[in-house]
Image (cartoon, rainbow, N blue to C red; front, side, top):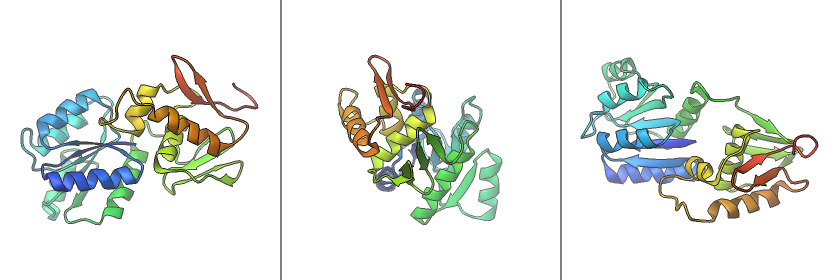
Length: 224
């Protein structure tokens, strides 16, 4: 899941970004509306966490811009304006959810996961392929009923491959979906994480690699 946090208070933006990354999300940050609009043109996001009162382009205007896009992200307004009237006006602008500051971080995480599931192109909650079952909400993964002990990035990588299946994801696409804009495009972190994930999934191997194309999940008993 890739998130854009639009928050002009830099300390809060960093706390949000680090906390959400610890939950396995790829997070980019914009401190004003202009930077947010530029990132939205460059990257595909599942959810935008949007403070209403940001400089450059006001959060209300940015929300309307997001809702007019064809492949739009879901919008969660996270703002100090928390009166019933504020909530109504924010939802009227097209926000999909509204959470007032101060907030409880675990509630924010649950709301973000719920919004990602509601996104028009989101898939079923439990992902299944090649004997693997992954539940993004409960953060559980098994293979042939054997529980997998995965790190945050390994879990996110497996989720991305299952969502893309049976298609391929290139190294660049995995960096974009599982890491974020700070990831070094020349790093071998994808290769290293794929290697660890293969070992934890066990035999027979279900992650196949095609040079110049990318990685995918393939059922060893069927498609190769």
